Length: 316
Image (cartoon, rainbow, N blue to C red; front, side, top):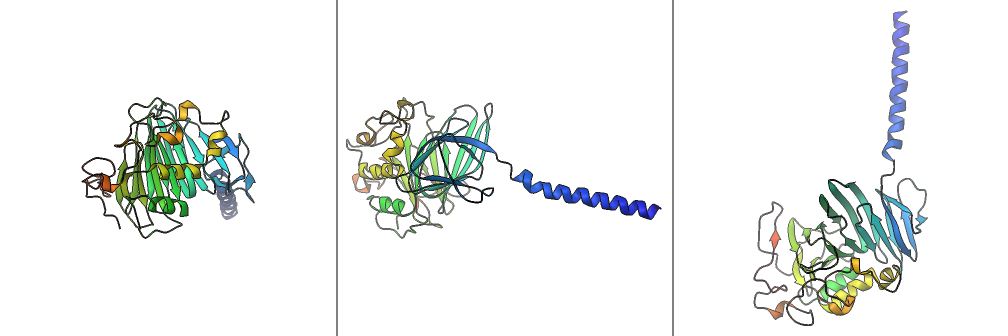
């Protein structure tokens, strides 16, 4: 009798264990919502591991961890996150939010991926510790407050290599990453948190801490080139990838004052909320100063993987 009882006990235990294992994937697949589609223009789709095929995104759709957003030509989307941060996704882009944790009393932690295309990030709540990191095929961008534009792919390569500071460099048109700090400056009226962007590639970090500064990672395994002050024409081309159509989706033909940002090119957005670089036209190249920097400063700011200050990598 004892042997029969033991066999029955073992069988029940095995059944319970099997049911627990079977239930685990379902629990792991539970959607963790992070925000919603605040505006959608053109052809935008969403895909994730739970869908059999991509679905069209409409305004108001909830966005969760692991959702992959794709936009086609002349298409844009804005994702409003729970802490009022937002992603402006440009045309022909692929963006995924990998992890997002928000506590109104403690702050926000965001990890995302820009696989291809164009992405504009606006910081939201100033309460608590707020961090954001966006990975690209060539590196990663750490964001503290502020507003940042990021491009990945062929357009990033084209725009960067037309900048005098960058010039001709060996790039990969699937991995090339171009980053511009858009604002705000110390005198900004936008309500955005003054901050900075840390652009890292090959264990070297370039810090962008003034509106209009940019950095370029030409390929995976290459160190960032920069910081340098982007030209008016370059900034206009970045805006074209984010797309004016995205701005018009707010209504009344433009971006509202609360999200306007400081930049070095007043003619593009029509207003300067931050500080300008040297020179009236906002264009400044390495030939404009004796220290071969595009920021008017005597040194460029770079760090190695251990946080030690090192000479910035040469332009190649």
